[in-house]
Length: 290
Image: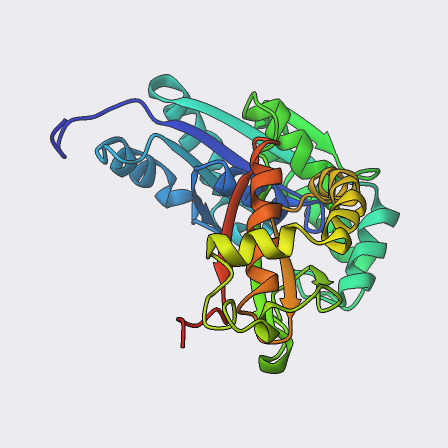
């Protein structure tokens, strides 16, 4: 396809009341591979969609529209009517009960986009201004009782017609003497295992060496550790995924990060791969043999 040729572009417009979850919804579409633009002036929507139609690499787009575009909203219905005649288009309108929106604004301590000191007054004006957008919507979602994670899951299942993507797991082996990895969500200290560093023939090797691996995995303490660790991870990972986590980092540390922790990290990787998870391993402090 040449750049001048047009192709089908599926367009989602995400709009609604401030605090109802528009940013969360857009993030869900972006994670699913949509090309997302927030706060695009309504007068530019048609030109933007047409441009995407001439870009072969873009087939799904999501556009965020809110009260910040109040100066352009009079044109919205005409623009949308024209697009519906030529494009695959769907409009999602997010809303929530007034008391819920007030609570959310107080929790985030962010001002309403209208800038009113009276939050109730701002919310009620916003409802009036966005009434036309609501009438044009294909689907109205009340997020009053939804947590951010539940809204993401609803968007993923309803509009993307698939289950949320499986969580990716990153495993980092490290040495405590060099500091813990700040990105780690879970930390496991394996310094209780017998240390190959004190065995002359193993000291110059690293944790990826078959000899070091055999030594570490043959220890009774290692076997007992995995008897506890594997069920724990089987229990925890689905719970993290349900809470909307797309990526989880597991840190495994020993004293220097050269022997024990790399072996354990690799064994965790093998176990998680059997669960069909996307798993990667980094041996942060495993230096070459000396």
